[in-house]
Image (cartoon, rainbow, N blue to C red; front, side, top):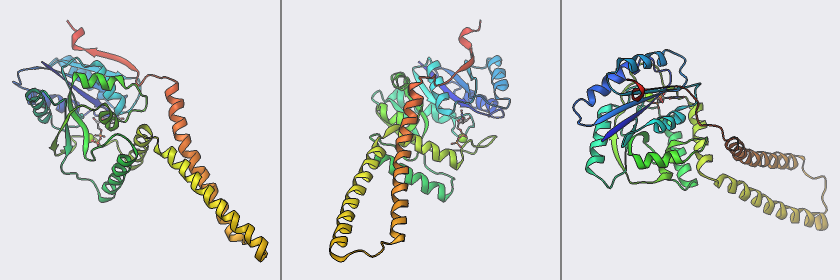
Length: 313
Ligand code: UDP
Ligand code: MG
């Protein structure tokens, strides 16, 4: 039995060595093999340098996949699975916010419960602000209503799964990857366990509000076509309103006779209709953009270097 730990790293220079130590400590005497697959996501600091040091130290089996530039965490996870050879695969962050001890618990659970394919951790306590929590809540209720996949609000991508699940995830070769949706889409029986995120050992989070917002849009566009239907409905409703108003105007003209029609109402109508059209074009544009990018069939990531303990003698 073998476990593969997939660790995406972007500017985590001061975290990789402590992370490595923590993993070795956590899996000391676990009774099975494990490998760590670090994916350097085009870091601009000494992350790759430190990863190579870790690799050369050979304290445990290590692979290092280094990207030619920053492709994003989702691409990192994909590359990690592609290079994993374990029977179980875990996603874990390099900043030690997610403790390796929990991975060991996840593996133990999968070992004892053959019916379960995935053990995912969700955060029981979150140290984030009220505004962010509010937006996250809105996002999850929106995407759960819009799309066919069900997303658990507090679940992270901190999880361990069987090889079969990994193969299914790899089979989804979409360029715009939204992990939470992909996990839900592939299915499999998932068991959730709570965990409390620790503080980062070093460095800062790569997320800010703008990135989270864009990520949320990616998720909705990637897993639902309902916004398109929404724009069709909007057009339909506008057409009905226009017909009713047309009848009213004609009747007014015939029976009452219109003095000069209101300037304000015309301006309001022009602006309103213009806004609706732009909104609908925007929605369609989002999808067209995704089709365009997918149709180019570009690789999800480019690796400039892959170091593997398997190639060392
Ligand atoms: N990460 C990455 N590529 C990116 C951004 C982040 O590989 O473009 C990695 C990062 O190094 C870390 C993990 O993804 O190991 C989670 O990132 P972060 O800690 O910034 O997110 P948070 O824990 O704040 O949600
Ligand atoms: Mg983190």
